[in-house]
Length: 260
Ligand code: S5P
Image 1 (tube, rainbow, N blue to C red):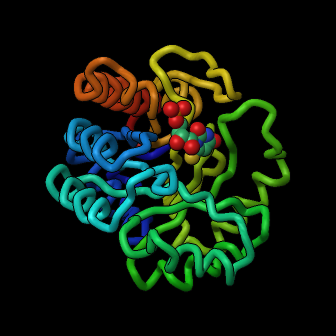
Image 2: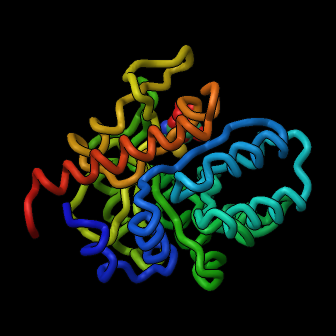
């Protein structure tokens, strides 16, 4: 693993460059997802955790009272606190359909999400469809290469072929949702969900590892934390605890590896 600074020159996509730059300047490899169902709840958490994060991950389709103003307010918070917005849409259809879903409908995801993600199950057309809309807007894509949930169907072959597809579109695909680093390519950024300060499970198949396990043992870049932060008594304080845990783990990892 190279440091974030050493990875920067390898990235061609502007979102990847911006992300690594933010991670360095904010000393944060923390992405928070306030999976809450009203605009006010999501915006309140975003404002509280904003100083501690490099990315805010949304599920815009779970918000009951969505209006386009929500996006404007989220963008204001992203400017105020300097974080990127990642809509966790998990596109998974033929190219032409994902293109329409990304650009149109109620949410117009392509107009505001710096990052979105896709399953590769349909084949490379899913990437081509999203790229035909997102690349010229300066957006980026993550591919789901592994999941955190119990008994998932991600096989070794599926993961390998997903990495190959990413390599063929590295101007748009900036990395993966995964549980571990899967290749040495320095331009791919690894985002890992299923993170809590204590490992364990929820009642619906989610499996949690600690920030140290993800960053030191599994060599990933960004930890994604939801309930561990937004369900805490003081989400602002808790986000700082996770930011420090993630950043300290990264520093420790660099020490273990030694000078590059
Ligand atoms: O493999 C995955 C991929 C994703 S993007 N496992 C996940 O849990 N996620 C997302 O990460 C999930 O949709 C949710 O928004 C978040 C985890 O939330 P938490 O509350 O379990 O930390």
